[in-house]
Length: 546
Image 1: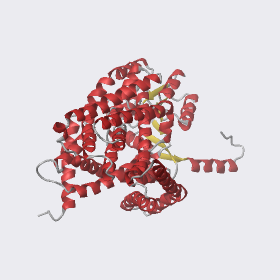
Image 2: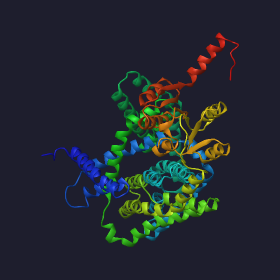
Image 3: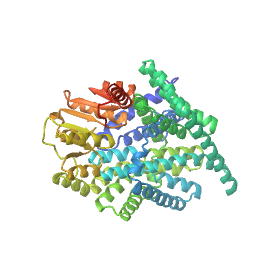
Image 4: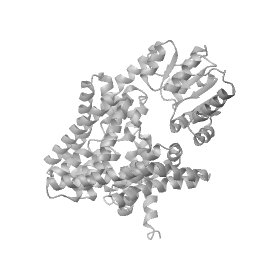
């Protein structure tokens, strides 16, 4: 009866299968991505039973890629990268190079040309953001130095993949000689440069201005539609006008919007649709997997899996050790990178579209990714055991970690940046009990060495707030400048402690409304407070200043 509605059938089958198998994977302590890929496999062309429309699924997956890359751009943090740049940048560059070389040699051994082999190797070199964050969070290592380095490392890999999205279409269109290839790459670089220039000169003003006008209407659904329209519109416009990939256009749309004070609301409102289409992307990838690769080319699949898990693990471990980090930290970072995921899928899909990768190569990457995601939790649990024990010991000795604060009637200061440091020092100078919550180990050590109380961890996590004795606190001062992060912290504090007074920091009226809605009792907006102080100074020139 519904054969005339293939789009509806494809979406329904994909989401129902993804929900059921994703839930099962979660219960088995695997990444839900495994379930989403398995759902695609079940409704794909290579398994019996119902077959979804592959062409429609691939079109839906394009939307998933656009929204996935838009989200990457929206949350891209140069600050996070720079904080661990001495290890993350050289480590990621060298490790990706080694993994790409290993994969290229493997591809050549399997009988492919150097071009397909190089793309195959590149697809094996980049880890999955989703899998890594899940592994770090499950072991309580997200807020440690090892967690920060791993995330910074991943940011570098993501940036490299953004560059690859420019190069692959040029290579895929073919060039007769190295000189022509260089010319094509130069032309592509000019087109990308023109697109970036337009986005910086006009998009940085136009996109926030449009969203601000939409926000002024007070319509939440219209604002959500506006965010999606801009992300999809910029991506398609970039592809049509500048011949830039959809994914790259969406990434820059996100980075431009991140500078807007409406970024947090855009991220929050578009999250459900981004998640939904990301799931459909993984389902569409699963539909491409031919399970016959397991019994037809078992040695090739085993070699691919070893390159992903063992090769990347050993390479990353050796690099971190060369940079003079401890054995336990090196094991954690190496294990977190020993898998591949969403960017690898984007690369092989793009490689298939331009007929660069043979079908066998695509199947090996997809099957290898699934197996690496399945294996990674066990590998990570083994590799992180000694580091977790060290963190636990440090917590017990008071060196780092969320050791419990035993006071009451105190003030909790979230973050220890320029504002947070001034707040905390002002409270301590007045003899007021205060405890700082920071995810920077150096800051925590500095505070404790000075004889004050500090908790290591991200304040959005319940156990960190409980370690700061939130239920006994009088006030929480949230000095985080990023309204997205501040909003998540405020919402978590309000859920755990309905009566505590929350004072947050904002940049605009939009931030004020957003943070107040999430539970802040007061939101201090810097420019307004400065204006009020200047008025007060004019009214009473004798009043002392800072």
